[in-house]
Length: 279
Image (tube, rainbow, N blue to C red):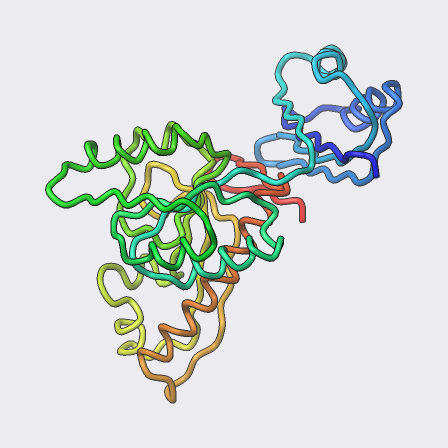
């Protein structure tokens, strides 16, 4: 079966872009399997994701695309293959356990290289799956000092993505910038209405009728990065705060897995503080 490649292009919109891009692929004897494009009319920006098969020289193809389209263009070329990732966790196991199982049964489209935590609580769970676990305690350390230790471990693995599977510490701007648009976080969708400790207890006391979760890229503003996936479920007065918490954790698992699928299949463009997703 021939290898499938993915071409991602974003650039200022103008007439004839699809024709020129597909023409370059045709001239290089490459076969288009699927194609999606979108124009943001407010900014006049063009986005295109193309899956194709065939043999090609990357440098030659990139040169031809730049020649056909001009210099104001961002081009990414990759093979359709598993991404290398590192998970970061604190004490909660629900998202971590779900991702470990998906990884074990080839349902994640990624290779989990390691798990990093600031507590040792989840070591035994991770080691059941024969994945390296690194405990880097934060007690008595400044945030920058603790994060420097994490970055040294990350440097050993060189992940394509970092997944915050309920990692409950705020990252510094330095780390966010080093892995721009490559750190994915999951949180309950009560933010900013129910911030701080015990959000499900707060929601219960307010009598909310829906609960949910949001997965997003991490940027310099806490929990305000570009949104990748969201979902909600109904709740009612018969459910306790504990019931709501369990239901919320179930939603978090599904939403995070959904966001990772989109990211690992190269289906996401970041457009300012929004995302363009070709599903």
